[in-house]
Length: 427
Ligand code: EPZ
Image (tube, rainbow, N blue to C red; front, top):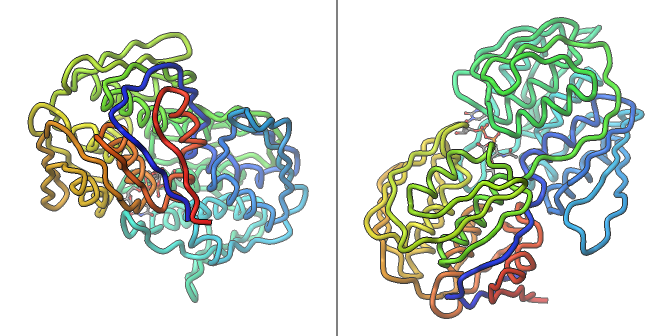
């Protein structure tokens, strides 16, 4: 297993390129199943999860071709062709490693009229059920049964009729599956209390480019006029707002000054507002965002919630940054039930954090000390890297395969702006 070694205490400065968004890519890729024509995705991030999703699509009969990717380039161009869907089964051994595999359920149901997808099971940050995915698809006319750990879904002869569903809880993935099922339904479908994350907007934009008709894009009420078929398209994946936010925290925690090239401020209002409130200088420029530390960080009171509120995927990174603030911060995690596994690892580096249920109190300390730490999930891993960048001494982050799922060429990007960071392999 690889590990990341960081010798901290160096302010970061310079330009850092932001990659295509992981959480957009993982819902754009399965759209290839919705047409027999080629779909070309540009600015696709070079990530383990993107590769895993490509392998799953290959098993379903989708050809995937990477074009024009020079090793030094960030992002890739991939053309996907689902001329014929040769399998409608997403097996357990794939789904258990990458829960986003569940996002083939809606498109397979829409295109092939059936799907057999393993239940994804829980993960480190929570139980993460898929009941809302299934309820939305049933509302659109799907017949769903669960047997032996698999979801077996089928559409009536002639395809899904479409229908209406109001989500009791905002769910990004369930909104995505429902949208991808509705675009080929026979009628009109309406989703209420739908997720509004920028990745949902990216999905809608690709679907419209493929010939879908969707009203209310960007709002919590989506109306889809089903079409008999969709055509191919070429589409560029949106920039990753969570990666950009993570590196913004790197500038803040190291007392640095970074220009995040390619970042889209319109997707990051809550993140940028939090940084500004913490005393960080933010300058929104054309095609980039400048983030510069400006004196000691100020403490914050923050609660995670669905977009446009402060994203749960930035909670761990903000916590790392706030360990050095001038006072006590209060963070509340309302989305996932177990998203504080970075806390004991940060504490080993000298952070002073008390967790009580969904709330964490982070009392600022004068400095952190490098230590060997263990990554447990993707964003927790990034919070440990951020702490290591600020800490005096050496930090070893173990199990960096978590990081490779969501951060394209992390150590290269950080080395280029002055970090003393390297990857070591255990062979
Ligand atoms: C997506 O996960 C993201 N993953 C997550 O990012 C992100 O944290 C999450 O949305 C929230 O923004 C991808 O896009 C691949 P949800 P998803 O359905 O779709 C409950 C990262 O670090 N729920 O919006 O799985 C669920 O338990 C990852 O990049 C149900 O109860 O999240 C949670 O409490 C982590 N039933 C809440 O809703 C369901 O059927 C929000 O989950 C579905 C969800």
